[in-house]
Length: 251
Ligand SMILES: C[S@@+](CC[C@H](N)C(=O)[O-])C[C@H]1O[C@@H](n2cnc3c(N)ncnc32)[C@H](O)[C@@H]1O
Image (tube, rainbow, N blue to C red; front, side):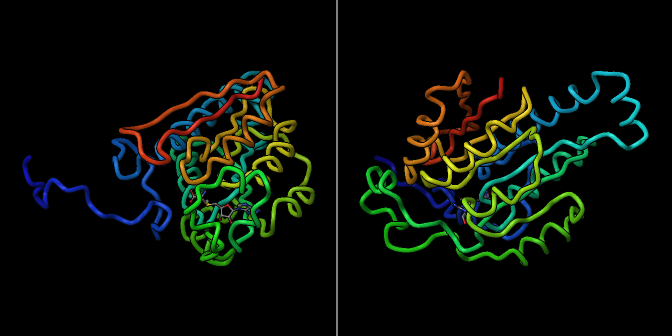
């Protein structure tokens, strides 16, 4: 057996969730950000699909050319420090696609576990003992969004989904990123957004293949069991604990 040299050892770098700057989103992709590459790809796909839909129809095309067309409508459920949100906004900006993004989070971390969580959560999961993802704030995310130049395109909504989703104004959606780990939040978001998705709109799931949060898969499978949509799965680079992601396109 040969000894591993320092140069060969995988770098001990912090999780992508602890980055304090914007996530790089462009090509060539960095393997370090492999966990986020599927989101970048799928958001780009949703934005291009929106663009095709928006261009079909002469009147809409004319309205858009004089700047009065409706922008792409997107939401992220679980934004934590806002890095995925800003990365998606940057992708839309690079593509020249106008977008309105709603970013929802408690800004107080994950809610309490429910029975479905406790049934499948690994025994040693940290979130059995303490609240995760509470080290953020709406003000800090607002600052990040504003400094990146997206103050007019992102609306942040603070509170638990069960309270905030019913307060959103009526809208149709082209892209929704569900990244909220636990069982009940997935069901709440799916029940709210599924009927509001435009045909061809995309719902992206960050945690379906997560080893730490297997309740995400239980919730998504339960919700989709009587729906016609099928999940598509994708991964960039080698498998990691949460590197494969999935999404569906609303029929
Ligand atoms: C993994 S983090 C999101 C990471 C973020 N999407 C990113 O890529 O940078 C999960 C977030 O979901 C939020 N969350 C989970 N359940 C929630 C609920 N029921 N209501 C509001 N926020 C919730 C947590 O507060 C946490 O910030």
